[in-house]
Structure formats: structure tokens, C-alpha cells
Image (cartoon, rainbow, N blue to C red):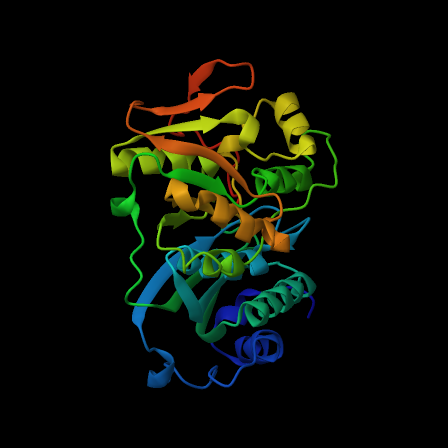
Amino acid sequence: MSHITLAHGNGGRFMRELIEDVFARHLKNPLLDIKADATTLPADSLNGDIMITTDGFTVQPLEFPGGDIGSLAIHGTVNDLSVAGAKAKYLSLNVIIEEGLELAVLERIVVSLGKAAVEAGVHIVAGDTKVVPRGEGSGVYLATTGIGIKDPTLDLGMHRIQTGDAILVSGPVGDHGIAVMLAREQFGLKGDIQSDNANVYPLTQSLLHLHGLRFMRDPTRGGLATVLNEIHTCSGFGIRAHESSIPIREPVVSVCEILGYNPLYLACEGRVVTVIDNAQAGQALGIWRSLEQGKDAAIIGHVSSSDSRVILQTELGGERYLEELEDDPLPRIC
């Protein structure tokens, strides 16, 4: 059988073979027991504050330059824990498959998912599989729940942000959104832009010892501009960002100019936005730039008491507001 059928979700032989031959074979770890309805997590592995996150993933196409929905699900879940200051330990995985999906595509996605989990040091310990009729899905939807451990003395959050704090981004923005868009081939455009889809824990962990670290966030849906607006809304302070300091790859700029997108609103899947005491901003920047993943990091602006909005200081010396996102520029992106 080369494609998923409804029988793969009926609880019978085909479903058992799918779980054993595709999922269990590629996601094998000592804590994954496909014969049990629940799993036990070792108590000694949960020392510290326990953090939990949940997420869903839908992207078209399922495979794109730089990743696929499988690696995206692992990285997205791990990253949500990482920017909260936690180390991801365990994940559950729910898979909703559309009837008619090629088994070869599903297997490639599961292989990629398993590889990303191993590289992130996270165990997939529980899961569930469902099949929906043809036309009622987009190939595969994934839903995850992640558990991580945080040092109880670590205090991160928007409540710690102060005026004068510096805002850093760990690398170029907009890569993921444009890579997925080009993979759809809807506009007759092609390019070699790769998604930034990656585990950001090395970036976040490298800054946790800095006492001036205030807040971290991964700029996924809505991109960098949305994170800046969230900081403004939740902290009550203005934001002043400098267009010339924001790292954006030239091919991303070119595609955005052709199609009318603003790269500051496009999703990233391997970047971190950090707010830190301005006195430690240079040190944080140096740490990130010493890592391959953060070599293009930049200080892009500051928290301001004199501004009442999110202000972008343009390269020409003017100013404009970065408003909150209202329309979805690229649906089914992550």
C-alpha cells in the first residue's frame, strides 16, 4: 500500500502497522511505549520548575527548502520552551493524516521529525494518530505538547522590561516565510532561500547567565514586528527600532519588493528576539556572534519612554509606525 487510507485510522491492523513501521521505528526511544495509553516520566529528570507548552502545525507545502512540517513541529515546540528559559525534555505528538497522502512522504516527515528530536535532546514519549477523509485536511497536521525544566531562580518576562533596554535579534528575519512562499511556486518565482527552521536552545542558553536578561521570544507568526508590538502592549513602553540595523537577506528584500510583503511581519522559525539591559547588550551580542547560529545577530533598537508606539526609524532618516498585524500575509506557514 503506497497511500494512506481510512483503514489506517480505524484501530485495526493497518493502523497498528502504520504506528509500528513508520512512527515507532523512526521515533524509538526508551520512554515511547506504543502498547500503553500513558507513560511515566522519571521524577529525577524533572528537578526544577516544570514548564509546559502546546502547539499545532500546518504548513503548505509539507516539505520546503530548509525543513518540513516534521522538523518544524519539533523546533517550534522546543523553541517555545527555550525562550522561556527552559530546557525541553519531553514531547507528545498528535498526527492527523489526510486520506490519500503518500506513505513515502509521511515517512520522510517522520524521519525528519525524529532526527530533529534527537538533535534537540528531547524524547517523544506519547502520541496519537488519526486519519481524516480526503479533502478534509492538508496532507498532515501535527499537534505537540512539550515539557521542559527551568531553573527556579530564573525570572524572565515582560514585567522585567525597563526603559533604555536594548533589543536584539539573533539573525536575519523573513527567511522562513519567503522560503515557504517560493516553495508554493504560486507567483512564478524561484530562489534558493532556505527556511531558518532550527532549534534555538543554544542561543537562549548562552545568555541565561546574564543578570540583565529581561525577556526572550521567537518571532514566528507575525514576525519581528508582531513581537515588538507585543512588547509595547504588555510593557506599556514605546519601542524605537532602526531599519538599517535589522538583518534581512537581500533575496528576501527583493522578493518582498516584488510581491508587496513586509519582511518584518514574516514568520521566522529559528530566530530569537531578546530584551536586555543596555549595559550588557554588547556582551550578549558578542556571545551570539561567536555562535554559528548567531553570527548575523544585531542590536536593532531600544525600549523608549519618550515614544508611545512602535517606531521604525528608516534608512532615509524618516520615521513610521510598525502597526499590529491584522491580515495574514501568508496562510498555513507554520
